[in-house]
Structure formats: structure tokens, C-alpha cells
Amino acid sequence: MKKTAVQFDPFKVEQQEWKRRQRRERYKRALTISSPIFVLLLWELLSRTALIDPRFFPPPTEIIKTLVVMSVSGELFQHIWISLYRIFAGFLLGVIPGIIIGLLMGLYSPIRHFVSPLIMALMPIPTLALLPLIIILFGIGDVSKVVTIAGSVFFPVVINTAAGVLNIDGIYLDVAKNYGAGSREYFLKIALPGSLPVMLEGIQMGQAIALLTIVAAEMMGATSGIGYLIWTSYKAFLLKEMFVGLILISFFGYLFSVALRILQKKLLPWR
Image (cartoon, rainbow, N blue to C red; front, top):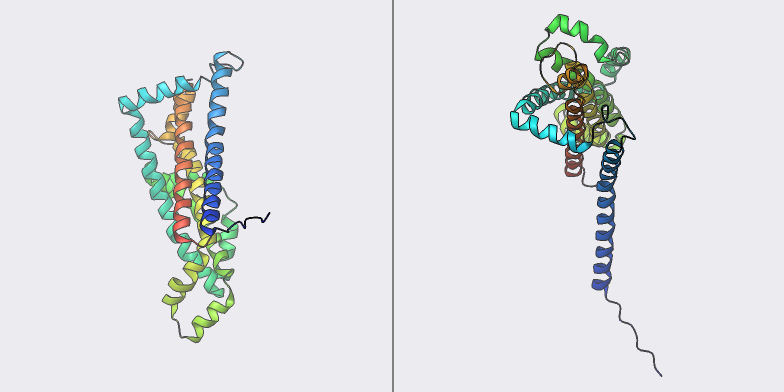
């Protein structure tokens, strides 16, 4: 008997491969969602059965009820708005100068040698340690919080941007020089796109540091904000309200991280 030859169908093979990729993506998404759900269910069970002290770790369902009550009253949105304003203002105030100075340091050796000692000397000092001095200079209002966040964000951005420029293959700089590129072309056509991968990692670090800084800054000399909510709730032993503040910080940290990753995919599709 003659065996029937099996015809190779590239379209069918490609379709099967696409289905496998879709299954893998669904599996990864399921894992991503399942881990926080598992932790919350475990927390709920341990708190309800008093295996952990519900006074210190109230059940997540009770925390969610408190979040809803605070949202309906409008109290929560006031804290969220003022904190987001401080975070975005401080973030931009730190990122924009960090990118510009980082590009200059990477492109021009004299600037790099002049600025590097200052950055290396100031970077190890925690910005929060300078908060008393910042409050003396700028008062206890929003400006001091914004400046504190900007100082924390500036250093990872400027260092990563400079490193990104220095890692650019020298052949691109030589080609630009041979074609008579000016300073503007070096900035916009070579340094900026070439340093983007490392720069965006620095910006990603900066947004995480901004969230850490705003909580600590609002615990001192503030009358509103998520950090203020966390601190005053702790002092009054209102732990449900305190956990609401912690959940908000965690939520915004995750949201900002996802947004920056989406931006990174748009700006760097080849990665």
C-alpha cells in the first residue's frame, strides 16, 4: 500500500503557533493575577481565625469597606489629589534637568569631569536627611515636598542618562561628525534616542523613589496627603485607615510602573 504524502500547510502551522503563544500569555496573566489574590485570601483567613491579630492586621474585606466609606465622604480623594500633584510636580522637576544634564555629561567630557564629583558627593546623602534644610529654605508647604521628590528623582535619571550616552557605539558619533552634525542633531538624533533604553530604566527607578519619598515627606510638616493619612492613622491606632493609605501607595506604584513600561514599548519597539 502506498502511503499518502502529508501536505505541509504553513498557514496551519502559523495558526497553531499563534494559539500556543496565546495560551502562554493567558497562563502568564493568570499567574500575575493569582499571586495577590492568594495573599489576600490567606490574609483574610488568618485574620478571621485570629491566627494573626486582627487588631494589627484587619481583614482585607474590612479595609475595603473603610476605603469605600472614605471615598464616599470625599476625604480620600483630597489626600490622593494633593499627593499626586506633589509626585508629578516633583517628578518632572527632577526628570527634566536630569535628562538634560545627563546628555551633556555623556556628550562632553569637560562637563562630565566638572559635574561628576558633585553628583558623586551628593548622591549618597538621602534626600530625606536634607528635609529639615529644605523646610528651612522653602517652608512647610507644597514647595518643600516637591523639591524633596525632585532631589530624590534627579540622581538615578542623570546617572542612567549619562551612562546611556556613553554606551552609544562610537561609530554613530563619527558618522554624525563627518556629516557636519551640530549640537542640536547630536542631542536629538543620536544622544537622546541612543540613551533611551538606559534612561528609561533610570526614570523607572525615579518613579519608585518618588513614591517612597512622598510618604516620608508628608509624614513631617504636612496636613494632607497619603503619607499624612498613613502617619496620623497610625498615631491614632486607626489601622484600617492606615492600610488604606498603604494600599493606595502600592496601587499607584504599580500603575505608574505599568504606564512607564507601555511608554517604553512605544518608544523602543525593537526591545
